[in-house]
Each structure stands twice: as structure tokens, then as C-alpha cells.
Amino acid sequence: MLTTNFLDFDFDNPFMNASGVHCMTTSELDELAVSNAGAYIMKSATPEKRDGNPAPRYFDVPLGSINSMGLPNLGFKYYLEYALQQQERTERPLFFSVAGMSVAENIAMLKEIEASDFKGVTELNLSCPNVPGKPQVAYDFELTDKTLSRIFEFFTKPLGVKLPPYFDMAHFDQMAAILNKYPLTYVNSINSIGNGLYIDPTSDQVVIKPKDGFGGIGGEYVKPTALANVRAFYTRLKPEIKIIGTGGIITGQDAYEHLLCGATMLQVGTQLQKEGPMIFDRLQEELTAIMKAKGYKTIADFRGQLKTIA
Image (cartoon, rainbow, N blue to C red; front, side, top):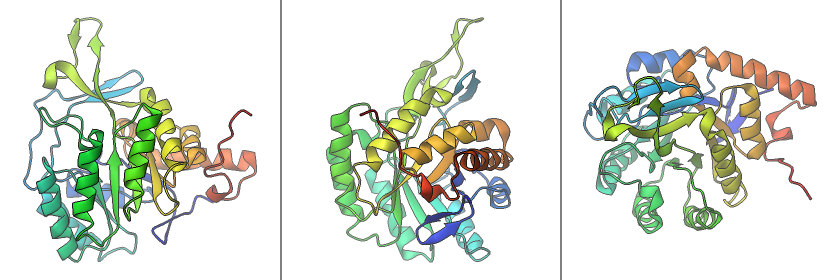
């Protein structure tokens, strides 16, 4: 019932982890591999190992989370080695995420992936909001266009991009026009809403240390924005570019709404951090129950079929 075709492969279900959650180490990745997630993605890699921002840098809040992790990871070669080993054990395509500190770093890592035996899907993170002094590439439309142009001069393997949230209809139009120029496999929308602030009501203090408490917001707070971005890109991008919906997926109903807006795969971040990989069992049960109640036998029966008011 939940089988999802993506990249000409039938995944058992559309659920994945969001990059950055439960995917730092090979042991965490192994737990995802044996979980009931349909697929999983690795931690966004930088060329060398990064410790990230000082702690505390993640905090659970009532309707989600705030974080300023700063891209902690064990380095590009660590994840590429794991990916090459893992793909020999499974037919399921792997998702590999890269997030360099500059366009040059991203291009260098993508050239290594192109030259390697990696056969999965690469995600280029253009939207990390939590590295001090480093703006998000995807908010600079000209730079995004130039970056993708340079990448597709040499990159021939499946590639998706992770985007930040956009808040203006003109920006949806502008970014979609850029993305439609390139042979992208998918767009992942959204990353966290950047530079929110949460205050501890007891201490009158911010709850994370980096950037004086400013951090990316995830969880229930962001679902309406995530749904809007999924829908906006689903209706603007050429059909070959699929949508991975990310943001505010806590229940099966949330997952259903992302699919209704046009997502093909779904990534779970904040709630996976709170519940662990067993969340994928619950989400599948809840989504299946909703589909049965509505008389749907497959996700294709309703995906993208959001109704508007005439």
C-alpha cells in the first residue's frame, strides 16, 4: 500500500530520516538501515571532519526544536567509504548528502562522487542556516544558478538539492525557473526555518549557545511553511523533478498532507530525534489507516491531489 517509486526503484514506503538526524556515525546509519524506514540519508558531509558549534546547540521545545549544530560530521571520506560498503549489501539506493563551506568545496566533493563507484543519489545541501558567517546559497538565486551550471558540466549521477523555505510567490517562481533548467532528480523542501529564537521563561535566557541563541526551527512550528513550499514547487517544477517533503511530520496525517501536496518521499527530523527509529513503524501504521479510511489503495491515488476552493 505504501510502496513508492523513486528513481525507478520501488521503496517499501516513502519515509526517510532528514539529514542531520540519527545519521552521524556508522552505528546510527546501521540502525536506520535495519529500521522500517523506506530509505535513509547520511549526515551532510564537509571535506574534512567538523566538530560543529559549541553546546548546547540543540533544544527540544514544546512544538518542535531549535538548533544551531554547525554541520558537525565525520568528514566526506568517512561517509563515502560507508556508502560504498553499504551499497554492496543492498539493492536499495543510498542517499549521500554534501554541504561544503563554499561552492568550491561542494564542486570538489561532487567530482569525487562522480569519479567513485557510488551508485546512489546525492543531495547537495544549499540551505544550511546554522554556520556563523556563511549565508545560505539558495537565497542567492544568481549564485544558485551559477553553481548548478558548473556542477552539471561534469556531474552525471542522480542529484537532488535541499532548499530552505521561501516565503514569497515571486521567489517560488524565480527558483523554480532556475531548477527547471537542470536535470535534477529531486528537490528536498524544506530545511529548518533559519534564525528563530526561543527563550526559557524561567531563566529569561536563550536555550542554545551559538549565535547568541539564534537557530533553525523544526517540528510542528514549520509544517504550514513546509506544505506551502512542497505545493509551490510541485506545481512549478517539471514532472521529472520529484519532491521530498520535509518539515513538521509528527503523525501519519502530517505525512498524508505532504503527499497530498505533491511529495513523493518524506523526511522526518525533529520527531525522529525525539522518538528514535521506531517512529517509522508508527508513521506507517497511521498513514495506512488514513488511506484505508479514505478508500485509497496506493499513494499514487491521491498524491498531488490537493483541493482548492473554487
